Length: 395
Image (cartoon, rainbow, N blue to C red; front, side, top):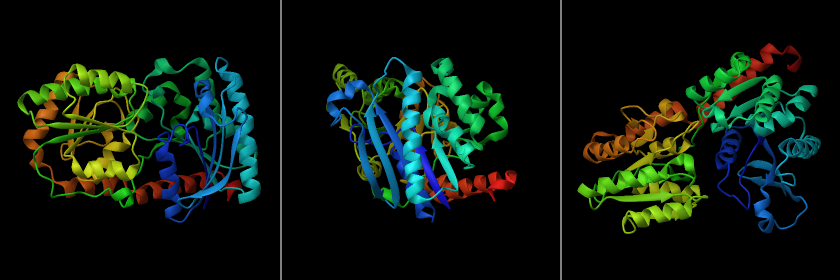
């Protein structure tokens, strides 16, 4: 099947960590035989003025990355205080790039738009007019925090859903939140979890690690909703009775300086490692070295890092913040309430005490059965088959 993927965000020279899982999903589909092309138009914040090589659009020639052809272009947001004008400007650019890709690569059987904001909204009408089916896959935390949805955002979401053939939510909580706010989407919506390629990046268990020192791992962008401040507070308490415990924080982001200050104020410099942004191969290496992964987020639409860690045999600790409720079971780890440092501390202490009760191979098998790349590809193809059956003109 010829599939075009149109992500709303994607790795770039400015933000290499953005949307890496979109690239991985594209490569997963290609791995199982689909002809996959990525079409991405990135509009960067004006604060990146001096990081963009030229003020005009930076265009890249199509490039084969991991078996996927990527069409990419980047520019600055020339209308930062006028979101509708930015939207219309990007829509024109994106459709033009899409038309070029079709001329050079052929018309796709299916387009997957990652998020209604804004890829799905920008290309939905054009695809419908050209009789090309579209699946919109949602990832945004806005649905779980409705106060973030402006009226303009809501209009864009409705535009995307009006023209989408199917809508995919990555978790049950996300599906329920979408339906609660956009009930017209209910007949089109399905839950398909994000996948992990358990053979990629060496996501495999290391069963020879020593129990001490006990090492906690957190992989997250350093942003407010990740609540790393609570994790550091909980870890400081854990160390009172476990002075050899260690914490590794993998990631970067706008709160890096704040995180460094908290580490200093809690006198954790000798026990916390702050690695910054790392590629997936190095993240997998840390997962093999550590004992458990902690994700203390206030909101997660899925929680891909949880299944990556579980593929390495790690038990996990996560908050009931959306996606983790579909992932974490008593056999794979602990769930705690959001924004509750006491509960988080207790779970971390319990993990140290009960760590040996978790079976790495059983945890990994859970990922293979529920979140494997093969199951993801099957689910996408099944959705496409449903679309074809419901729209005979696409046969």
